[in-house]
Length: 131
Image (cartoon, rainbow, N blue to C red; front, side, top):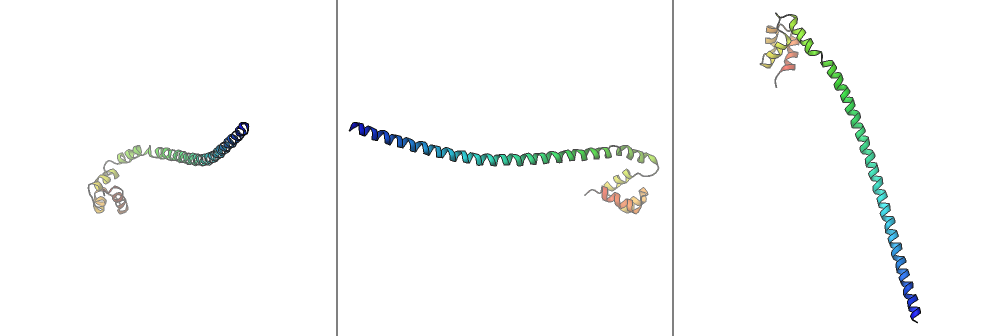
């Protein structure tokens, strides 16, 4: 009788252990599946961010190239302006007209005092007017 009780007890213990093991295995598979989904989302997010970073780098390179081109185009302008200013010292230069516009000179005053055409005076007024 004790032997039968011991066998039944061991059988119940084995069934209970088997149930815990199967339940644990099922939970582990669910956790692994959730991790796989999370890993896939993370990998996709990393790919998206890498693409955005690559796009930003390409834009930055293009902006750098454009800035370099502008720098090359603008670099000789101060010398050119100085040459134009020194070309005829008896005429009022465009830079002096710009200063007059900054002080509030009208288009008519620019045409009279600087010898500018109407169109040049209007352009100087629009470019150098202080708003």
